Image 1: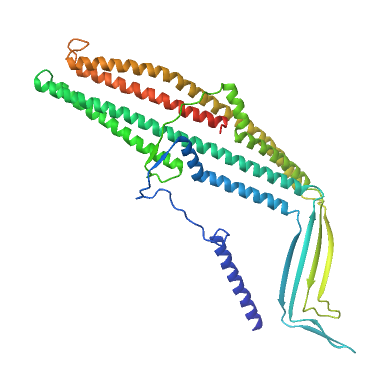
Image 2: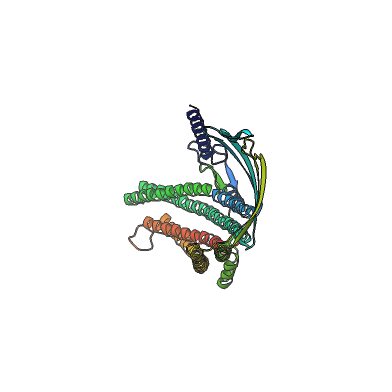
Length: 460
C-alpha cells in the first residue's frame, strides 16, 4: 500500500511538472503569453493625414521597420551567445537532492553491541558541487572569439537591412511623385479633350463642323478619361505602397513634399571601390571567413586534453551503518584525454577547412554581384540623364506642334487639304502627352537610379 501511494505521488508530481513546462512553452519560455500585434492596416480605419519629406519618410520607415527590429533582436541573441561562451569558463555550482524509500530498512545484531541499523527505510541526501574548467588548450577562448564574430556579423546584418529599408522607402516615395505627375498629365490631356469636344459640338451646330468631328472628339474624351482614371488609381496604389514601406496603416492619407535633385554620381571605378569598402555584406563575408578559420582551431582542439577541478559537499541526515557520517566533502582534479574518438576530430577539421573554402568562394561571388549592382545602377543613371535632355527637347517640339494644330483647328484649316483639323490636334495632343510622360519618366528614373546606386555603394 505504501509503495502504491509513493508511486502515485511521483506520477502526480510528474504530471504537474509537465503541465508547468507546457505552460512555459506556450508563452515562449517567458512566463508571459505571446502578444499578437495584429495587422497594421485595419479594414475600416481612418488614420490622421500625414505629410512627410523624403528624409522624414526614411526616418519613419527605419523606426517602424519590422525587418530592422528582427535584425536588432538577432544582435541581442548573438550577444547572449557571447555571454554563454564566456560563462563556460566560469565556475558552476549545482545542488542535488535525493529522497529514496526502500521497502524496509536493514539492521544487524552484533554480539556485545546489540542491534545496529544498516539502512533506513527512508533515505535522503543533499549534495552541492562546484566545478571550474581550466582552459589549458584555449578551446573556450576560441569559442568566445567565434561568438564575437557572430555578433559582428549580426550588427552588419542590421546595417544591411537599414540600407534596404532606406532604398525601399526612397523608391516608393519617388513612385508616388511619378504617379502624381503622370496623373497631372492625364488630367491636362482630359481637360484639352473636353474643350475640343465642346468646340467640335459648337462648330457642328453652326454648320462649320461635321458630325464626324463631334463623334471623334467624344471618343477621344472617353479614351483619355480612362487613362486619367488609371493614373488616379496609380496614385492611390503608389501611396498605399509608400505607407507600407513606412510601416503605417495603408489607409493613411499621406502627402509628400517634392524630391531634391539627384547628386552627382561618382565615376564607375570610384563607385566600385566605395561599394567594396562600405557594403556591409562584404565585411560580413570577411567575418564569415574568420569565423570559419576559428572553426578549424576549434575542431583541432577538440582532440586535446581537458582539465577541470571540482568540489563536492554532501549532507546525509539518514546515514546509517557502523560509522555513520552525515557530512562529507571531496575535492578532485579531472583530466580527460581523448585516446580514440572514431575519427570525429579529424572529420571536424576536414569539414571546417571546407567551410573556409566555401566562405572564401562565397565572398568572391558576393563581390561579383555587388559589382554588377553598381554597374547596372550607374548605367541606369547615365541612361536616364541622357534621356532627360532628349525628352525635354521632345516636349518643346510637341508643345509647339500642339499649339499650331490648335490654331488650325480653331480656324478650320488643316496642314493637308481635305484632312480633319480635329484629327490633327488629337494626334498632336497624343504626341504631347507621350512626350511629357517620357520626360517625367526620365526625371524620376534618375532619382530611382541614384537611390539604387547609393544602396549599391553602401552610402548612408
